[in-house]
Image (cartoon, rainbow, N blue to C red):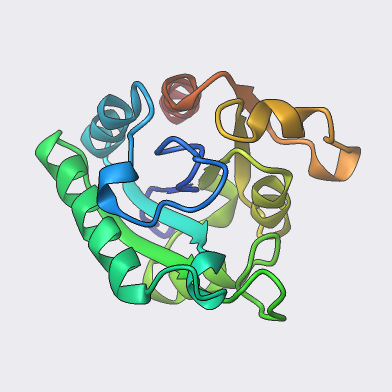
Length: 187
């Protein structure tokens, strides 16, 4: 008998969901959704997908802002998404500093492992949308389908793609990534 897994799409935060400031978003007032993201998140929810955010937030570990500040930004982001008709089921952050030796900082797969302990999904049928080579590598290493968006660091990182880090798809932005996801879902 075929198991009914949850339909999940993992999404990186900075550069995919919101404008990447080239540093850290340290207060909600600096958080700016990229064009088309709120509509895309609504469409994903309407198609029965659980949206899960997977993001490195080394600024906490490096002492640039507190976990409480990050929690406030996350709560405000999820509320804005909900008000626009979308839903973020869960958020998994690596809070270790950039020089920390942990298993959860992308390109390592620890955040996906944490999510998989709580959400029953089939990696081979699950997408990860990111804007960095480290996102694509982490997704591929966990067996996910990967979409690199050219927002955030995507355009710059596109030149660094190797055969080992080649995403399954490249999209101009989150809206195009959602279109690719939904076309795949219709197959």
